[in-house]
Every structure is written in structure tokens, then in C-alpha cells.
Length: 485
Image 1 (cartoon, rainbow, N blue to C red):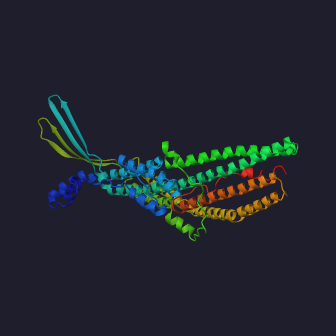
Image 2 (cartoon, rainbow, N blue to C red):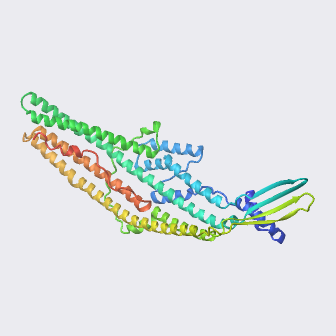
Image 3 (cartoon, rainbow, N blue to C red):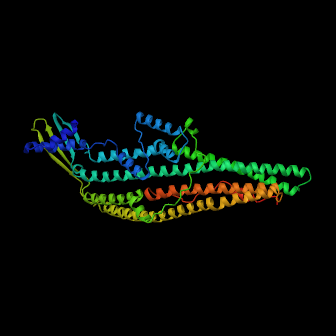
């Protein structure tokens, strides 16, 4: 037990009437000092909530030792090709914006500790002379109202502190979800580059063959131009896909807070496989209202406003109440002692405006909480619908379209070997097959992004847009249908 805590305990055990008076004075002096900072600064709650919802660890970097531990953990994770879980873990440890958000916990706890401490007492001294007479005035001022309202103010700040914990946890889950989505987009964009490069090679071979046949007089200028323009468009589209891959990788890099040599991390060559079955959730809305941190935060905020309304009504008429002890001395006269009470009279301001403002603020908070709950219900339904649609489309491409394209390519190869179709038709079919595979990759990417958004919608806060912009090969797929025939 430290000296301050021992003093607080000693004061509470005083028994005699004389010491009770002394205890009252000493309690006022030491009461503020009894309010101290917690060991974890409220971060323990953030750790627990994050672990419960996504199974990841978080770290608040407060000193050089913490920074070294985080850096070592990040280096270890970067030594192997990234998985989605390792990318999220790096972001939760190393994202500097998230570290800045953690500081809000310290600010909120500082306000809580400050609310439990008294305003410093005041002392005034005056020395006045009138001829040979000297008048000395001494006044000691003590904030009585501040002492009375310490429990109320402390409770209010405690509520705000709890609300800050929820907000920080929600921001933590948002970073985790953004990192998951960025990871899947980066891997899919990397795959798209590989398949688009194959399309370009096929288009290049077709254009070169058309050029040679046209030079030999066996191919028309129109058919040659069609092959050449497809090759030119495939080249341009490959450049766009490469830029998309760079942008997606850099977005992931920013979320993980990497720079320097660390940006040379390696991604897996392909996306995770589609699960065998989709998630079946029968009580979507109930889960969202029970687990979502923005809903919990809105309810707590309404409670905070209600508590502050009670404080506003209690102090609406009495704004300043201070007690002062005076000890005045004047030359040639006995020392003058007494006390002074300062009370501002409610002549012009009866506190009605403050009470009305608090009541409207409470109504605003209640309606805002109801609005967030309604939006949470809607968002989780929409997000689950997007998740199921993405799953069904990805499964459809995997089980139906891609196998059919492969079967068509096999049949065309047999026809080409039997000299029933030209090489241009064979190359065009190869491009179509590659385009179908690339489209499946996009659908698979959209599924994993939708799955990440669903998790956030159920446990954290609004996931934002549920649709995903498509890149890849759509612009080329439409032009791959046998351009010369």
C-alpha cells in the first residue's frame, strides 16, 4: 500500500469527535489523491472483447520495450508468406492509426481521475496601509460544491470511460475487417495479373500468326486488324490490372503499417478455397443487437446523458458555492477571524436553459440509439444477403461454368486436331477459358470480402458498402469471342 492509500485508510478510521473534524478537513485534502490510474488504462477490456470476437491479440505500445516486442512479432510473421490471419495480426499490432486511437483510453481515464479530485483551494493575502495603520487580510477558499458533486462527476466520467472502451474496440475490429478485405483483394489482384498475362500471350500469338498469314496472302486485312486490336486491348488491360494489383497491395501495406524492407512481404499464390457450406444464421438481428459494439455504445451514451441530466438539475440553481476562512489583522486592534460563503443568486439565470438543453440532448441520444438499432438490423440482413449471394455465385462458377469451359476447350482441341476449326478459334477459346477462371477468382474474392463484412456487421459496427467493384478481365472477355470469325 502506498503512502497516499495509507493516509486515506487512516482518515477513515479516526474515531474521536475532535479527530472527526480533522478527518473532514484531511479527507477534503486527500480525497482527490485517492483517485488513481488503473494498471492497464482500460486496455484489458479492449483485449478481451477483441479476442472474443475475432480471436486476435492487440497491443498498446506505451514505451520502447513494447515497441521492440511488437517489431519482433511483426518480423516473425513477415518471415513466411502472409495468411489472412497473420496480416490481421500485424495490422492490430503495428497500425499507427490504431495506436493513436488507443490513446483515447488514456485521455478518458485522465478525465475520470480528474473528476475524482478536488479543485485546489485558494488563498488570498492583502496588506493595506492608511497612514500609520496597517490592515492585513488573509482568506482561505474551499470549493464545497466540488466536494459534494465528486461522486456524481466520477460516475459520469466512469460511464464515458466505459463508452470509450467500446468505441476503441469497434475501431479495432474495423481495422481487422479492413485488413481482411484488403488481403483478399490483393491476392485476387495478384492472380488476375497472372491470368491476364496468359490472355496477352495468347492474343500476341494470334496477332503474330495473323500477320504472317496476311503477309503470305492467306488472311484478309480485316481479320488481321481484328486480331491486332484484340492484342492491343489485352496489352492495355494487363497494364490496368497490374496497377490494380499494386494499389491493392499498397492498401494492405498501409493497414499493416509497414515500410522500408518490410514491404517486401510475400502473398499466397491463390485465394483460400470456398467452404463446403455457407454459414446458416437464424437469429441475425438478435445477434447484432446483442453483440454489436455501436449498439451497445449508443445505449450507454443515452444512459450517460440521462445521468448528466440529473446533475444539471441538481446544480441548475447553485452554480458556485465556496466557503472561505478569513483572518484579518489591523494594527492596534485584535485579530479578526470568521468565514465567508460565496453564493451566486439565481436572479438572471435560473438554470432553466441548461436543464432544457440537457433534456433535449437526452431525447436526441435516445432517438440516435433507436436509429442505430434499426440500421443495425437492416445492415446485418443486407450483409448476410450479400454473403449468401457471393457464396452461391462463387460455387456456381466453380461447379458449373469453369468445368463447362474446360470441356468446351477439350472438344475444340479435338476439332483442331481433326482440322475442323482454325488455330484462331482455338486461341479464342483458350482466352474464354482463362476469362472464366479469372471471373471465378473475382467471385471467390467477393465471397471472402462479404464474409469479413458479415463478421463485422454481427460483432462490431456498420461494415460499410457490401458490394465490391470488379476488375480483372471483364473488358477482354467480351472481345475474346473469335474476333476474326
